Amino acid sequence: MNIEDYREYCLSLGNDIEEKLPFQKFKSGEGVLVFYVSGHMFSFFDCNDFSVISLKCQPERVEDLKAQYECIGNPYNESPKHWIGIAPAAAPDELLKELPRNSYEIVRAKYRKNKK
Image (cartoon, rainbow, N blue to C red; front, side, top):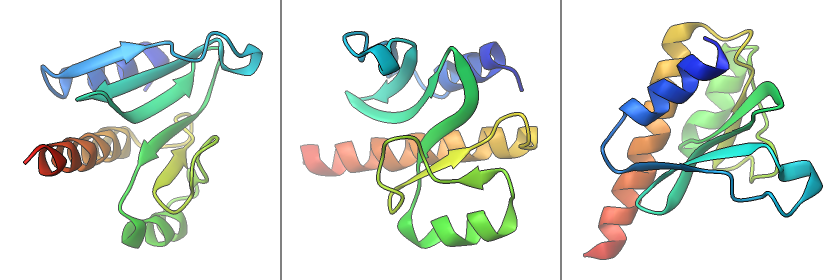
C-alpha cells in the first residue's frame, strides 16, 4: 500500500476523521500527517519518509504482533506500551487495513467512554 492509498484508507474509516499537519513548527515534524478521531490521534506518519506508520494498539497485543510480524516495531516518538510502528513497505495490505481500523476503534471507544 502506498502513501496515498493509506491516507485514503484512514479517511474512509469514519465520518469523524480529521487529518492535520500539527507539528509544522518543528523542523523534524514539518511533514508529519496525523489522523484524528474526536480530536485524538490514532495514526501518523512522515509524508517525507513513509517508512514507519505509528498506530495505537492494545498493550496486551503489542508483543504478540512484534513476534508475529517483522514489519511491526516501535512507534515514532510515542510510548511503545500503547503504540506500535509498522513498516508499510514490508507489511501485507490486510495488516495495513486491520491495524489502523483497530487503532481508530481504540481511540473512538475511549473518547466516547470519557464523554459519558
